[in-house]
Length: 128
Image 1 (cartoon, rainbow, N blue to C red):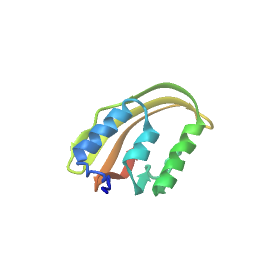
Image 2 (cartoon, rainbow, N blue to C red; image 1 turned 60 degrees about the horizontal axis):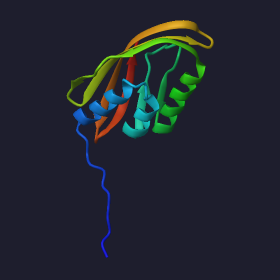
Image 3 (cartoon, rainbow, N blue to C red; image 1 turned 180 degrees about the vertical axis):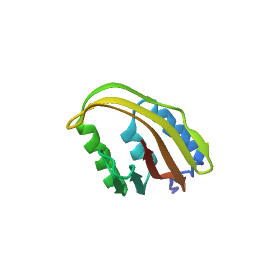
Image 4 (cartoon, one colour; image 1 turned 30 degrees about the vertical axis):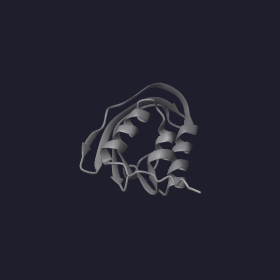
């Protein structure tokens, strides 16, 4: 009798970034979280952000994202640049033109910085 075991292969930062980019270009942000985020991921917005602050852990980060999406009343335009890699970090530019409950129509142009460790994203930090 033989048993088949499946072992998740370790991904390089480059491979994580390539998968992130493919999903981001399709606006599949929750799939990015499901596939690439570590259980202990941290999500950090700028100090005094009117939108969000800090979340730690995959469940809390997912809730932060879901809460944001639920406030969006209309999408007028979005873009995400292709990543730039530096060591175990990468950054993308992201812009949204959206109507948000409680804020009206807003435009946000930001840099999103990510850190990769042990084949997973352990940090997302937003600068806007």
